Structure formats: C-alpha cells, structure tokens
Length: 75
Image (cartoon, rainbow, N blue to C red; front, side, top):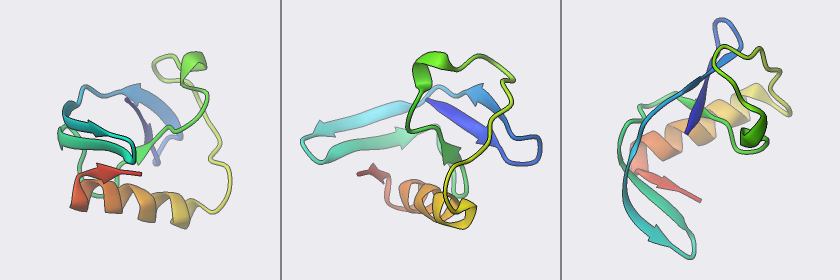
C-alpha cells in the first residue's frame, strides 16, 4: 500500500501482510500502525516521494487510518 508522511505530505510504498480478503474489505495482519494514512485512490499514479494533497478533512483521514491500525480491518 502507499502511505502518506504527514510531515512532508509525500507518499511511500509500505509492504503489508494481508490476513484475509472478504466482501467487506481486507484484514491487514502486519505493516500498518496507528495513525498511518493510507492512499485510497489514484494509487496507479503514485511514485516514491510524490508530494500529495489530502482531500477532505485531514482529521477524518487520520481517524480512519487509526481504525485500520487498531482493528486490522479496512472497510
């Protein structure tokens, strides 16, 4: 997956370990931590250190990333 470094607003690839695929989403077993912001759209355009601008409310994005890291589920 691609994650966003919020200090520099750049993206970086991050290897993850997927535990399970379901109709509702993916369960990530390893590779994400609380607070990580994961790129959800436009991943085909990502390159290492690409400067990005987060759309929408940054707090909402961070909150969603915390949910993923805490529960291990991406919905």
